[in-house]
Length: 308
Image 1 (cartoon, one colour):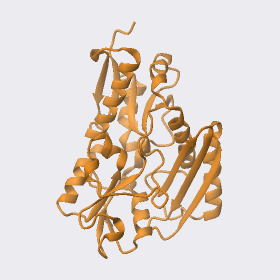
Image 2 (cartoon, rainbow, N blue to C red):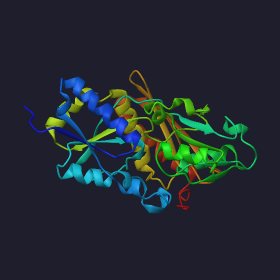
Image 3 (cartoon, helix red, strand yellow):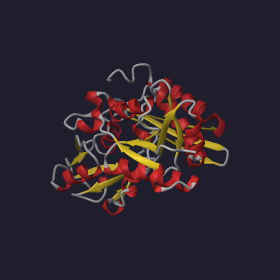
Image 4 (tube, helix red, strand yellow):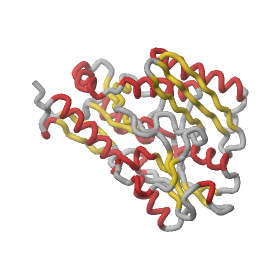
């Protein structure tokens, strides 16, 4: 019988807390646990503290996970909750992504101040984003648009937009839905023309390898289709050495026992892009992602990422 409360580690932003509370709620429901059986431990990460520079300049995705993963490895917490798209493809030794909640809508959402749609923005308009992928895709759509850096949580970025620091911004629709802020969206972007980041819309749970008790507790929360899709997308990223310094998009969908994947790599200015499609058995999810990455890189040429 469990005596000490189960501890969930998370960042302290409103979205991160909403995701951790969702995991807590599902754990309690799945196992009939009381309110005092599962605690949320809020942790500050370097990615939260460093707000004056793009992630690509200060270390990439790992800035949002290192302190939480340190606590997980030394036993201060029992599991960690993350946005899947923030997770590096290489995790610390002894840790792994053990479960994924059912994925929310993976699309990007445009919030326009000067116009409701990207195509309707005036010539030379400014769009704020901290994502190289979004920047490259915007420039692919509209080479005349100026892109400025937007760091901070959802609320901070929307405040910057209201202050007039940009004519529009782009955020993950899933995050806005989890915060009950769908009403701010002026356009949902077509995932074919504006493909999402690998992992976007999915909540990931990280735990210690071989922790049988935690594995048993998490098993009812793990969504089979989401897990397979993320295995494919993360394999695509890993093969391409994907990080916050590389504009890479990818989305896998599941239809029965078949997995359909679409991926894209771009130059930062959006002037060159290479797309790839793949399909196969769900059981081969990671193989499909790796093969797609190798094929798109062969198509782009060995020097495609030389600008990094």
